Image (cartoon, rainbow, N blue to C red; front, side):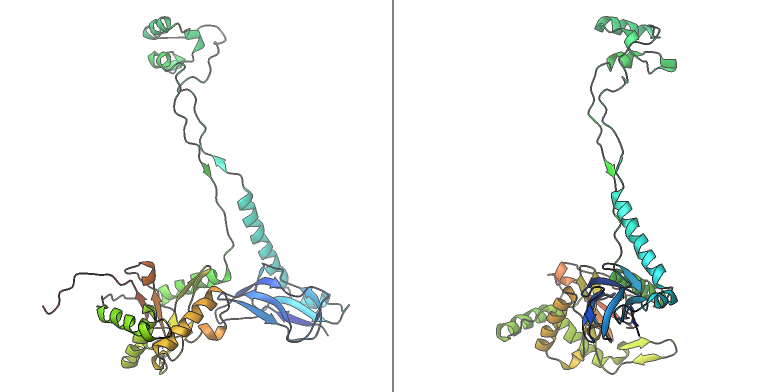
Length: 369
């Protein structure tokens, strides 16, 4: 009997998935454990394995298309098996596919729209035509007639800009005079389909901002001793220690001393976590990921450095797994390496707190006052 393969829920926040690439095609023999496709979740691209043996009879979501979780991804069964009833019984397939196609068509149409010209260059200031009027006569002021006679211009060649088409002084002065062409600009735009990651980031940040009351505390920390300590450590350490590694370790130690910060709001209860898992915000091309340094308070700086560097690379390569980004109890967002002195971070649910870290700078400080 044919089996339906549904779009998997690859993370706790995933609502839709996009097929990055099919590794099997209709008619191929499939065994349990074979990789069927690569699927983009809201956080990473993951390989999806088949749980069934048989022949791939149907692909419900084409390459680069999105579909909701639990919609038909594929159907696997015996060669030649009739699967029309299975497809008909799952009406959710058609709307998902149509919606994706409409989105793609909308993007293509928007990109294909011709640009609109805003302005055309002008060649003369006020002379749309230098042809004689039909009756050979033209109304003109006495001054205009005199100037026209002096310059050898026939007023019958002009269309006046005065009342009722009367030729006036400026028409004579501007006759044949060129002006600087106007700048010609174009309007245009391109609509790009939003990735699953960006959809989730937008939804979670909005939920956080509107459901978690935010208040902000800012302070400066004297880093002289930290700078010296890092330089000293890196002279003998086989692993290069960054300021971010030191911040992670310091925060973990601080949380151990102040455990109420290591909590989350659960609706009816407040959960005080006894373990310390530090989420480390990592910027990637499609948005932001937060891999987790687990039990950070019990790890050495070298261990944290190795783990943080590995997570950063996996995030950029879209190879993070669900266990890599789940379970944080506190989050750190560090923009100091980009020259940012201060910024406001948004809480990463379900955490109760997030630390925004700016850059280190030299400042005049009063000591022993």
